[in-house]
Length: 87
Image (cartoon, rainbow, N blue to C red; front, side, top):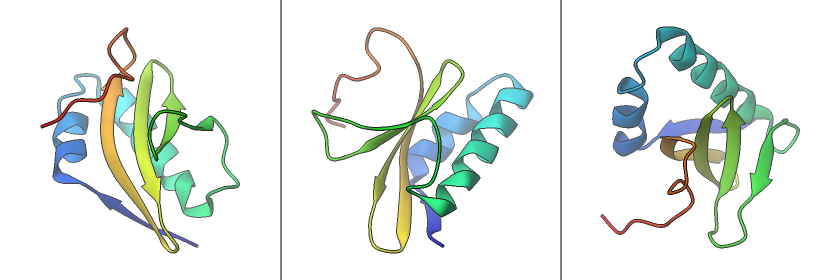
């Protein structure tokens, strides 16, 4: 079983989700990543060394290491979702 770590940026993005139920759905879906790779709605991204978890219209981007899943970003799906930002 893997440990889940949230980056500060991802936690800030999650807090900005206005709908409380959507926040809960995202948290529950992220919880299933403890059993990675035996999870649904996950895709390995071609342009990045990351994975994407789909939760309704939201995307959770994460990286996977031996025992850790690191949540990198939480974004609403739009035309800019998969563009890389350098912040």
